[in-house]
Structures are given as C-alpha cells and as structure tokens.
Amino acid sequence: MALGRILRHNRNVPVGMAVLIIVTLVAVLASWLAPHDPLEQDLPARLQPPAWTAEGDRRYLLGSDDLGRDILSRIIFGARISLVVGLGVIALSGTIGVTLGLVAGFRGGWADTVVMRLADAQQALPGILLAIIITATVGARLSNVVLVLAFTSWPVFARIVYSAVRSLKEREFVQASVAAGASVSRILLRHVLPNVAATIIVIAALQMGRTILAEASLSFLGLGVPPPAPSWGGMVSEGRHRLLVAPWTTTYPGLAILVTVWGINLLGDGLRQALDPRLRHLR
Figure 1 (tube, rainbow, N blue to C red):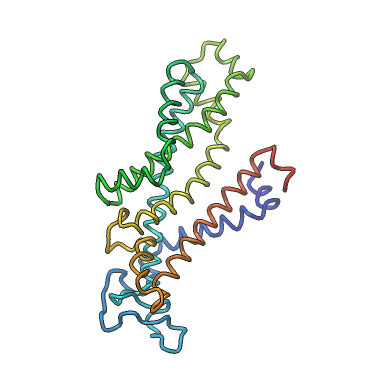
Figure 2: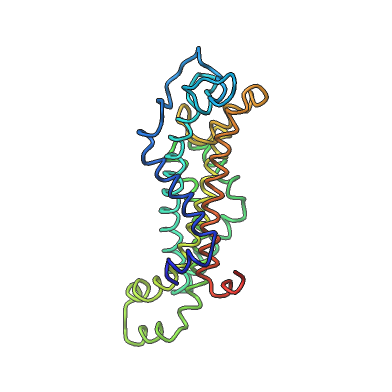
C-alpha cells in the first residue's frame, strides 16, 4: 500500500507522524529553540511559576525548577536524549533480532533451537525488571541505557521475524531460489527480507514508544541518564517532592513523555492496520 493511501485511509498514521516529526525537529533544533541553557542555574529564580500565571516570570514560559533552571529548555533538550535512546535501541536490537530471526526461521535445526530458547529465557523476566538489574550493576550512563534496553528488546524482533520467515520459506519463489542453487544469504537478502520489511517497520514503531517510556522509567529511578542531563524521566523524579508546591516541575515533563509515546504508538498501530491485510477491513 502506497504511503499516500495509508495517510488517506488511516487517521492514526498522520497524527502519529506529525507528533514524531515535531519531536524530531525540536530535538534537532534544540540549540536554537531553547530560550536558556538547560544546565544554567539561577538560584534567586528557583521555582518560578509558568509565565502565563499571575506570579510567573516572563523569562520562564513553563516555570523553573528548584535550581532555577528553565523547564522549557530542559524539556526541549530532553527530546534529544529520548530520541537518541529510542533510535539507538531500535537500530541495535532490530539488527540483532532481525538477523537471528531470519537465520533461525530459514535454517531451522540447531539455529532455531538456540535462538528461540535464548529468547524464551530472556522473556521469562519482565524487560523493565531485567533492565533495572543490569543497569544497577553496570552503572547509569547513556551508552549503558542504550545497550541494556537493546539487550532486553531483541527477542521481540527475533520472534516475529522468525514466525514470518517460517511461513515464507515454503512459498514457491523461495523454493525456486533454493532449487536454482542460490546461496542462503542471497535468498534471505533478496527474497525473504523484503517480504518481512513491513512487519519490521511496524515492530520498530511500536517498540520505539516502549523504549522511550522505559528510558524515562529508568531515569526516574536514578538508573538512566545521570543528572544534570535533562532527561524527561529524571525531571519528573526531581520535581516529585515538590508536586504540591510546584506542580509544573513534574507536569510538563510528564506531558512530554505522554504526548511523544502516544504519538509514536498511534503511528505504529496505524501502520500495523494499514500493512496487515487481515486488519484492513476493520478500519
């Protein structure tokens, strides 16, 4: 289905795509859009209410935190961290999971047994719990967060690609390639992978939202991106003790997480319905 037709017949896709584009532009242009340095402290201006309130300071559109840092600027720069983690995790876990799923599904035998049993063993524990345990052990850093979340996410790609390849390998065009003596790598790259590309795109879109939420959860617990980096989850954690006194310190970062994850999930769900023939009649 062409992109234009998807956009016309599924309302979730354009809405989710618009949210993702806006967040991406905010992240890329953060240095130009942010009115203040996100790390700059101004203690005399601490806990300033948003500018639109009666007591607000026009310098701080969404208010300031307990160290006098501009909430809006920190949210803008926080978009960079969320997207870097989200894209990094999807790229890494997708590459590992898709590769293992292709090999296990097409080769079968010991490859099937080893890959699927590894996926079973890893998914026996909740992903976020496993991420908390590993991050607490190796330390809280941006690179560690990406590696840990990728490690907990690859089985999702592997399992779904594995199932798709198992059905595709019995199709006539694949059997014809095998009979013609084509190499396994050629068959996988030229015939199998293009036929599971739509499935991979949908998984990636859905996993992106979950990854951003997982990073925010780890940062909230102090196991994600270390302060003073402006992580949305970290901002919510820093402001939770002053929720009744200065609710803007947690409300706006929380809304940033909510809107971003909501938009990406809309995009993923819309793509799933548009690209899955079994679901098109439900729209």
